[in-house]
Structure formats: structure tokens, C-alpha cells
Image (cartoon, rainbow, N blue to C red; front, side, top):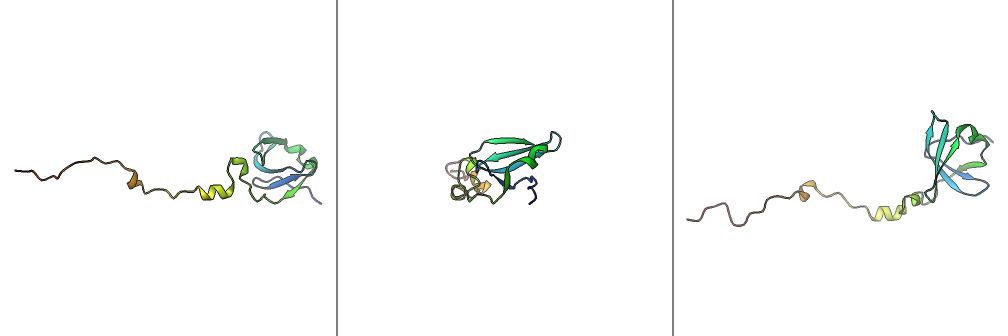
Amino acid sequence: MAHPKPDIGDWYEDIDSGELFEVVAIDEVHGTVEVQYLDGAVGEFERDHWPALPIVDAEPPEDANIAFGTTAHEQDANTVEPANPLDTLEGESFTGTDELDH
């Protein structure tokens, strides 16, 4: 079985700890793979050490956005349609009419 190659956006499971993590960046210059765990913690692995890690490919968890503070369901529920920009403009307010009283 071939060892999984790190790809941004892919999820992996650490076989030893059972922790799930997502690859969030690959730094070719410094030779590192940056990952984020479900609890929001960020980690980094040396690219050269990646093949030796006890990991396997994993499906994204049902709620992969939990590290960002809200669940995917909460994010959908809190989505508000953007207001019409014209509704947010403040205009000048005048009383009366523009007709002169004689």
C-alpha cells in the first residue's frame, strides 16, 4: 500500500492517536507540510518525514468546520442575505415639501 501524498484540502488520520487532520499548506521552499486538527490546533511536519508518518487517507469529518468555532449547520443557519446597498445609504431628510407657501 502506497503512503498517501500530502495534498492541500485532503484529510488524514494518525493511526497511533486516531486524530484527524487536514493539510492546509505545503511550503516547498522550507520543505514543510502544515496541518490543522479538528480542535483548531495547527501543526507542521517536515516534508521529508511525511512518508514515515503513521497516517492513512481519511474522509473529511461530517463537521469539518468545527475548528473555526461554528458547526457547518450553524454557519448555514447564520447566513444572512446581503442587503441591497441602496437600503443602507443614509440620505438627507427634509420635512415639508419643496413647494413654497405664499
